[in-house]
Image (cartoon, rainbow, N blue to C red):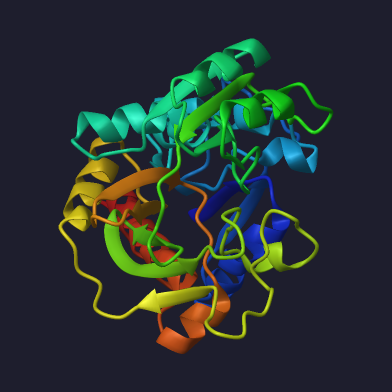
Length: 317
C-alpha cells in the first residue's frame, strides 16, 4: 500500500506532524535517520516522501544523519519517487553560505557576511566590520547555534580565544553585520507546497536564538519559546500580511525545489528587508496558531494527503 514517508531525526519535532496524519487517518511510516541501511539494488516503496532533516542533528547525537539522509534522498530520486524537500533542500539546510548565494541569485538581499574557516580568520573577518556591531553564527546551524553579538573586534578576539568559543561542526563560522530592528522583532514566513501560509512576528527583545517549536520549550537554552513575556507574546501571527517579498520567496522555493520552509527576515530602521535564514525543517508555534486559527502542520498533512492521492492515481492509470 502506498504511504506517506516522513524522513527525520527528531521525534519531538515530528510527533506534531504524525498527530495530524493520524487525525486525517492517513497511512504513513516514519524513517529515523540516526541509523539505517539502503540497499541500492532494491526498489524504494511507492508513496510520497517528505524530509524533515535538520542542520542541528549533531546536537542530538545524530552527527551523520544528514549524510545518511543525502544517500536515501539520492536513492529515492534516482527511482523517480515523489520527494518533498529533497536533495537541493537538504543542501541549503546544511549551509547558510549556500542559502545566501541562492537568495542573492534571485535578488533577495541578505546581511553582509564573511565566511571564515579557522579562529584567526574569524578575527580577520571581524576587522572588515570595524566600528559596527557584528554577529557570529555557525554555517551549519539550527537552534541559534553559535549566535553571538559583539560590539567590537576586540570582543570577537576575546571570544574566539576563550573556552566559550563554539567550534562549528563544519568548521565554518559566519561573521555578519548586525541589522538593528526598530521594534526588536523579526518576521518568519511559512510556506507549504511552495505557497505562503502566514507570517509570524517574533519578539527578539530577550535574545535572538529563537525557534517556534513547542518541543523547544523544555530546557533548551537556545529556544526559549515557552518563556512568558508580560507585555506581548513572543510569537504572534500577523493578520493580513502582504509584502512583495512573499512573491520573491515563493520564486526562490520553486527554483530550489523546496516545498516546505520557514524563511526569516528583519527590517532595519529604513524599512529595508534582510533575509537571513531558510529553515527547511520548519516548526510552528502552537500558541500563536491557536490564537490565529491557522495550523501549519495540518496544512502540511493535507498537502501530503493530496500528493499521495496523485501518486495513487498515476499508479492505477
